[in-house]
Image 1 (cartoon, helix red, strand yellow):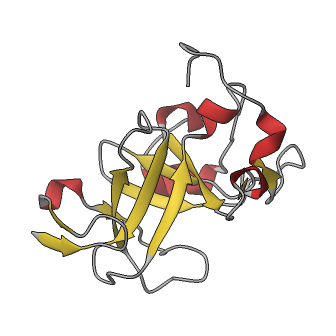
Image 2: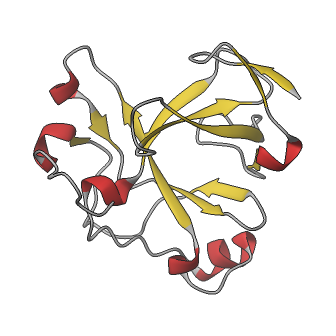
Image 3: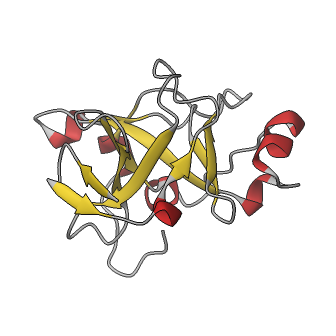
Length: 151
């Protein structure tokens, strides 16, 4: 299928690349289908959740483990069942970014990650039941990553 995107122009992708969000994203519950596209030169740590239906709707996301290797999101039993897994460790996680002109003022939401079952391509945004993570973590709080660090 050919998809018009916000940041990448037209891209060709197969239906197997589509991610299905049965609940949509917070504030965008009607949007059920997204593509996860990497930004060139980011090494896979900076990505884009692009709506497969609405060309101008795209969310910048990051691999939270690149920023915080000890990030440990835990989903509820109901969320795990909906995603078809038994443990949170079986899922991939991404956090949404608020991008500012001054990059150091940009932030990520570690409290409400997107959890993805990579085998079924089913995803959902969740609210973690912990005070360990907030909705606005400035990128500047994470400091610089060393070359070769795990993400």
